[in-house]
Amino acid sequence: MAIRGILNKLQISSGVFHHDFDSRESSLEALTERIQQSVEVARLLPIIDHPKPNAIQKLQGYFDILDGSRIAQKFLGG
Image (cartoon, rainbow, N blue to C red):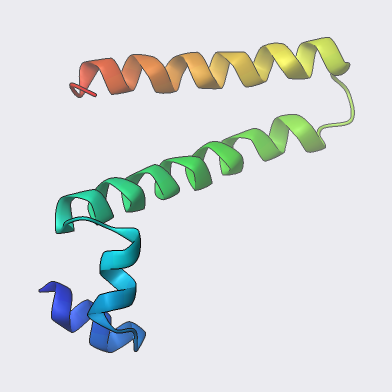
C-alpha cells in the first residue's frame, strides 16, 4: 500500500505525516521499533506478573530477554 492510501485510511494529511517522518523508510523504522517494543513488553509480562521469582530473578529474566533481542538484531543485520 502506498503512503497516500495509509494516510487516507488514518485520515491524516501528508503534512502531519512528514512532520514526524522524513521518508517512508523512517516511518517503517518507527513502526518496526514500536512492534519490537510491544513484543518485548508482551514477553516481559509473564515475568513481571509471576508471583514466585523475587525482584533479582525478575530483573535477570528481563536482561535475558533483552540479550536475546540484541542477538536477533545482530543476526538480522540491525
